[in-house]
Image (cartoon, rainbow, N blue to C red):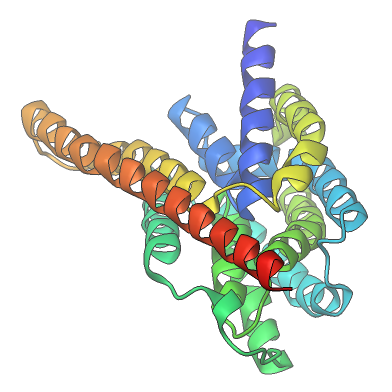
Length: 300
């Protein structure tokens, strides 16, 4: 019962992150299960089983708050579902001790990618609109779906930054649409795991706990997506992913415990000031926007 409650809280926190940032549910949930010693394919299968329900709740919530672009949604779901099915089949047929290294290494790279995306990529809101074509959506959907299923997470971290980098994309519409399209990706991945592994390999208790927490959090995440400082959340989440999965990767090396400890101390020393810097920067941006709005009101 204690483990069930802990996993439910993890699912709740993961969905708050995912619904607000457009990524993070699969990454945080899979990372936790891998840390607990769960086999990679079973961890990913259990998380995607939970995501079938949580992504449906998230998509409905985002649609009610007007955060979904229907045209973009239709272009993402088919290639995303095909890629997810292929990724689930690929992961289910991998064997050996290095499967965990593959998953942890992939999650580590995504953590670094999220950090770089939200720190350095130009804000799409300041660019002139230029709608992406099918040449953009088809490979994006397939690659995002494949790595989401084979890596235990990745649809949001791949699709959201790629869409936000396009000219004129509104962040709340991108986040809401990616969250809604993830239902098709999670469903296709789950079907792939069911066929390749069998339903008896999914830990239904863990999936149910993570699912429950995610469903509870989905409406709140959709509500706060318009006002949450996403860069701050991105730095926090990416830091957690980097340190957790780096630890798993370092376990496959021969470096000493003292060197490993030193690496993590350096990371913490970098991470804390970086988080504080982003918090201060977001506050300055918010104050500037408030002053600009007051100026417009006075002149009108």
